[in-house]
Image (tube, rainbow, N blue to C red):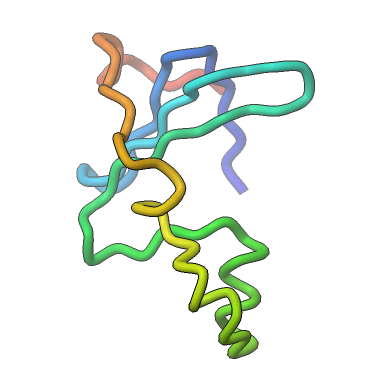
Length: 85
């Protein structure tokens, strides 16, 4: 597993088309923004596992990134900056 350190408004870029942005840090919680092509499914792990189990209730609630945040965060100026370790 690759472990990276990021501060608020800093990004991680995956495969040139997926960007993870640290939106907010509050206590022990970190809010992340995910910008990805629509054809790439993005779920929290517990939602992904429920979908994999075939839990229809989770799919019916529409637990997808488009439902969790209507407007994705804008990429900060340092989006292409060097990654820290």
